[in-house]
Each structure stands twice: as structure tokens, then as C-alpha cells.
Length: 268
Ligand SMILES: C[S@@+](CC[C@H](N)C(=O)[O-])C[C@H]1O[C@@H](n2cnc3c(N)ncnc32)[C@H](O)[C@@H]1O
Image (cartoon, rainbow, N blue to C red):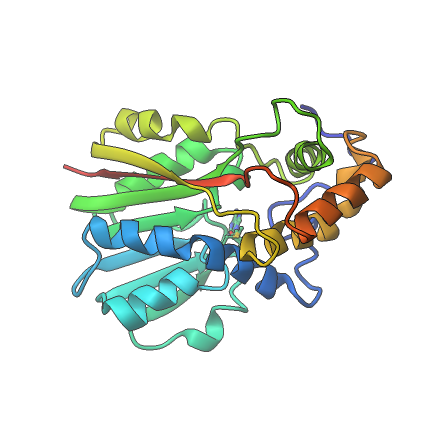
């Protein structure tokens, strides 16, 4: 899908589409964290995060995972990288340090970390394969790469409900404005195996779209913030979008949220 520069102002994640300078962007990211942190924490513990672990958290956002690693798991260090570190900076200190940088830029010595984690980041980065290979290079022997991203379970299939049309339009809008691509994320296990990692595994978490669920509030806010780009795709009409919002808000969408696919592998 090409980008129409007349219609959209293209930028990386957090530069234009979600209006990160407006109040509420931290809260929106936190809603996503509330929905998915349990699954991420379980996986990071399962691959061995614990006292002594040297961690690199890529695209750390508001830092719910970085802070948990530093404050509750008691790891040796967490370096949290994001181009927007304003949510992270108040929490730095002790084992938690921040680095304001593009995720594709930092260069660390090979084997510097025991755990490298990125969630909802590579899907927004056009050169995701190259970035995954770079992240592998930062792992010490025996260290783990854990990557999480969205998996779209509904938008390409019938029925053509307002919810599915809105989701389809949202993924198209993200693609056209940020370059987000979730079509490849089911290939994560293969990607990690091709990078030479062993003990590769993957799992999917799908939080329920209940009226009071944090993921429901997350999608409503995401649609609201990206509304003009969503409508500009022509894949959903304003009326259908309102119906989709209503169905989400009152818990009657009766459908699946996009899931979190978490994939992991170990460097030998
Ligand atoms: C959807 S948020 C996810 C935040 C966090 N990982 C989580 O799961 O809650 C994506 C984060 O990645 C950061 N990000 C995306 N692309 C980036 C890039 N190329 N360089 C630096 N940060 C980037 C954004 O600023 C944002 O904080």
C-alpha cells in the first residue's frame, strides 16, 4: 500500500498520528500495558529475568515493563530506549537508565545484555528484520530476545461489521501514516529461527473486548486520536465508525481484539 503524501503527514510512531504532544498519550499507552503486561511479565520471568540480568528495553513507552524489571524483579540493570523519554525520566535511578534515541540507532558492544525486549515497536519500524538482527547481536551467549507485536485476527475476514470495518481502516491508516505493518507478525518464530536463535517459541494473548476492559478503552482512544486518518482510508464511513465505537463502548462488538504475539529465542 503506497503512501499518499497529499492526504497524510507521514512520520514515525509517536511523531504525528497519535499527537503525542497532546495530553493523554501516556494514559493511552498505559491502557495497552494494563491489557498485556501480565502476559509479558510471565514470559520474561519464564525466560529467566531475575537478579543479575542485564536488560535492554527497546521502545519502552511509559516504562511499565522497564520499571517492573528494575523495581520488582531486581535485575542488575535496565536500559530503556525510546525517542520520547518524557514518561520514563521521572522513574530513572537505581538500575533503570534511559536513552533518548531512535531504536535503530544505538550501538552497543556485542553480548552486552542478557535480555533484550521490545513490545509493539518492530511493527512500526519498516526495517524490522534488520532491527531484530541488530538486537540479537547485543545478546550475551545464553541471553534471550523477546519480541511482542500486534497480530490482526479479524480485519481481513467477514462478517463486515462496523467493528471489523473500523479495525481494517485503522490498520490501513497506520500503514499509510506511520508505516505500521502487522501482516508479517505471525512469522515471528521463523524470523527468530532464521536469526540463529534456539529454543524458539511464541504465544498469543487476546484480551476480552468487555465494556470495562482496558483494551476496549485503548482501541476507542486509538480510533479517536487517529480518526481523520481512519476516515481518510475510505474503508469505514463516519456513521459506521460511530456504530463501531458504540459497540465497543457497550461491550456488544462480540469480536476479537487484535492480539499480542510474543516470540522468544535464546542465543547459543
Ligand atoms: C505502542 S508504544 C509501546 C510502548 C511499550 N513498549 C509498551 O508496550 O507499552 C511504541 C513506543 O515505541 C516508541 N518508538 C516507536 N518507533 C520508534 C523509533 N523508531 N525510535 C524510538 N522509539 C520508537 C514510541 O515512542 C513509543 O513509546
